[in-house]
Amino acid sequence: MIVDCHAHFEPRMLDLDGVVRKIDAAGVDRVVLIPAMNDLLPSTPELLLKTVRTLMKRAATRPLAEAIHRATLDRNGNLHYGGQTTVIYPLPDNGAVAEVLRARPDRFWGWIFLNPKADPDVLGTLERWRQEPGFVGVKLHPHWHDYRTELLDPILRRCEELGLPALIHLGFGARGDFRSMAARYPKLTIIAAHAGFPFYRDLWRYRSAYPNLHVDLSSPYIDERLAREAVAAMGPERCLYGTDAPYGFEGPDESYDYEAIKGWIARLPVPAKKKDGIFGERFLELLGR
Image 1: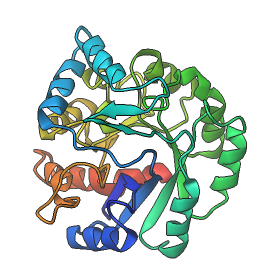
Image 2: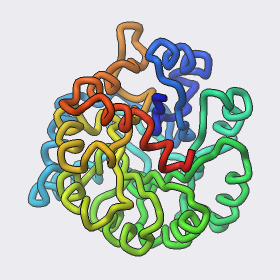
Image 3: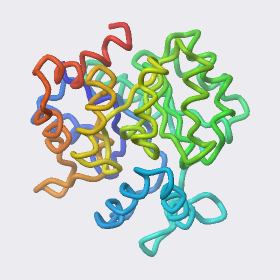
């Protein structure tokens, strides 16, 4: 089974029927959806993405990448670049994903998006949505929601108790303290989005210290070379197939190309069985399915 463990439900770019057509054509069996967390984004030049990826690879240059990130935020925490302001939603709408799960439980699961900085009853929100069939874990975004990961302690503790994995888009510095989280909650499955953005190699080298730490291989935040490096460093069993669809990787029809990251994994220099693990078998194991 092929499971895309990291995609967004963004019907303004790709509606439900469009997603189903895309995954049917690509041979993807299931997608784990995240609610949209922002207005539609302007295109990010590949040169800028490449520059930031390069800066983030080393601790010495990572502060420059953070400075670029900070320069794109306004005083309200919204993105401002490409001549426009893009609103970041403090509380992404889990209800939109719940509707998809009710309509197509055969093809979709969901992540419960939580933000402890903006939600005074964040544990209540978790309890509400985890009762909804099809939600399989929580999504956290200290990078764009701009909070220190210590705020996540109550959520991570509860997730560990419930056996729910946490998919986390780490931020810079104290907004991405993966070591502390992995150490304090050793029975919690932590999936660092985008091959461990913004740390990459500085996260991968802790593979042995934190066996509960995984990465997904999604998004234009990485490229095929970084995906290969992540698999070599973390091991295939700690890497998961994800896309970040419908962002980036535009196909001939000017919408999301589901073959792009799928091709990265297909071309990995690892045995077919290991690729099967990345494509979905390992994620199913983490869910206990």
